[in-house]
Amino acid sequence: MKICVLGTRGFPLIQGGVEKHCESLYTEFPAEYRFVIFRRKPYVRVTPSYPNITFIDLPSTKIKGFEAVYHSFLSTCRAVLSRPDIVHIHNIGPALFSPLLKLCGIKVVLTYHSPNYEHKKWGWGVRTLLKWSEKIALRMSDAVIFVNKFQLEKYDERTRSKSYYIPTGIPRITPATQQNYIRELGLTPGKYVLGVGRITPEKGFDCLEKAFAGVDTDYKLVIAGGVETESAYLDELKSILPPEKIVFTGYVYGEKLNQLYTHAGLYVLSSYNEGFPLVLLEAMSYGLDVLVSDIPASHLVDLPADDYFSKGDYEELARKIERKLKYPRQQKYELEAYDWTAIVKRLAAVYDKLN
Image (cartoon, rainbow, N blue to C red; front, side):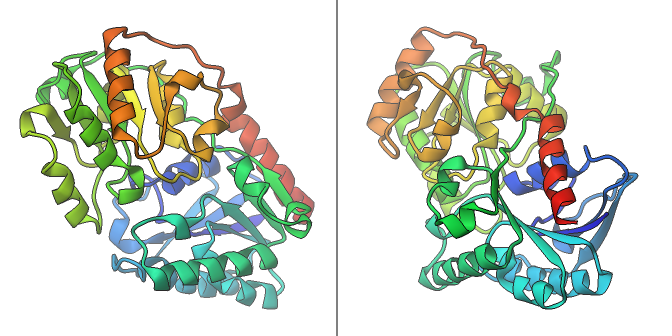
């Protein structure tokens, strides 16, 4: 079976939840499924060899609001020429041109990661386009994968009848034994609060910083994530706390990210919007104590009520951080539902049904 994949910037070593999702997912498939992954050239760092994956790198831009549309159009046209059995589109924006695929008789699978039009970074024009793309995506798709079961429940029977809830999985982890990277950052093991994610307003790092400013502690705050188009937001974040209280690592991965998770004293998910909180699952897989924004996506995992704080309420978050740091603890979570091997089997069954 030949499947073209679009809607991701690509992998490996490319920042983003969708990118991590695709890397973990497609590299686990057996050889009888052949994938063509369309990547965006400006983000490509390396091209590894996988037995059943071919990368096609197409021109793109990094212009906010135009990048995904431009690359999705090129990828859709190239997919038509490739004559695959299925095109798998990740997220609603890149599905704008899916009618062209249907016109050519190609089956379409959509993974609905998040309602992007809810993100603060988009203006009225982009939000309107994304809502229109959502309607097209749900109508044109032969199957829809929702990583968030609460999002699935919002739609009518026509959509639900061809939809499946398949969550994102957790990459297999081995806690770090080294501390050299966190020492380079001036951090002490167990004495910092960690937030991970792309530097964009919907991640709520401003709320996290304002909360941390109100906490009487010798812990530091670490924000691990890169900035792409939101440089003004990064400047705002850098103005909230004095430099000696906070560390911005930029985009990190591999052993460096492993060390940050392994040696953190507390993990905070401060997001205003999430499709599926992969970084929260990663933190839980390390056994970290967590505090999470009370949004629908954070209830996809089973956490005690005390682990939640009201979205955007930095005063409540400050009180809860202070309490967690006063009584530090490791946790053990039930995460069997997020095993990638089982997730691959469920998606493969969807492909097989359509083929």
